Length: 509
Image (cartoon, rainbow, N blue to C red; front, side, top):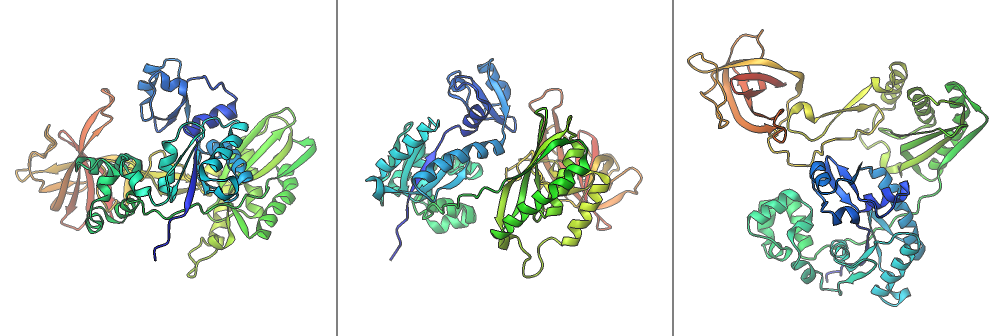
């Protein structure tokens, strides 16, 4: 017997980044505002939308449609911080609310207590409006995905209820773009599949073969077979700790020493709850009202010593202009102690390494010890992301995007900071060049990865992979192509060509 999908209510607050900005900065709701992410409009206010600003527009296009538009960069931390008020308001009505992302939450439908699903949504809407959230919409359906789509079709302060067992029929008429997988959606549209119903009618075996595990999951969503409900959350305890000084302290060491006991109380309280802190915000206030705040991350979790060290580093990097009156420790990311402990085979970071890195960092400065990670990008150098040890790197380019023109895996292991001039030769000894159509003028038979090396015979080569660099800027636009070359000595290189010029970008070790 197949278990029925849980009835789930989704609360959706459209354009939440704008709502959070207006609320925190106390700006007028009539102001034309757009929040940008990666240079594109992520969300905009009703006033901006009335002037033609749309999600996905470039900055220049948005301003051309609304010259008085106020542009603000996206701040996910602010969005989450302001959305906490919405979550607490909903929890007063029904426990078990789950934040899917800022502006979107789910909860089990409290229909019995309020006399029905639509009536329960009306009660939640009334409470949210009373606390200042005017644009809230609700969806109720079997499973999380259908409930979210129903909420997106609801009117302001209203609900859309999909009767039990009818999620598949409701979803069938929706456009495939609601799957929020740009690569798959683009492919489906090129195949003539424009609705979820069209996608759902494909054979499961064919979907698994053509689209893999991700496509199979989205296929189940399109068929209304999503059995995920709200997993709920435990309301966070009040863990913020602060210490005040009277009179204020002026030098770093007395401030750090006097804050040690408060840091110990914070770590001890978390330990009592079976939790650890991996993301911490330290706030500093002075007697004249100056405020300094910085968010810190830890590769494992914060100990008492780690908390005091971060306070010391913060005060060194951003000295307070007058005596410090208050230091506040605000845990922002708290995890279960069991989920962050050592693995069966010792997979967690070595504590001695962490202490050593922290010691070196205290000697050479916060930015003196860097941790490498990978982000998105077309060029190998662009994909490198370095962040200070203990900080969570913030990628400027999402790694999950397609990035047309990116070289196929495996990635090179040694990337040169500056491309090295190189030379590629044809069989007649002439240099190989790149034609206007992105093809090579002749087959490469020899190459010099740098001008000081001997000419290596080409054992194998692959390419070209053309890419238009900065095509939107006439002054910076370039048409280049990348090649992989393997020398007779077994060395493998990544080269880039532009016209008759060649450079070595990286080496495969």
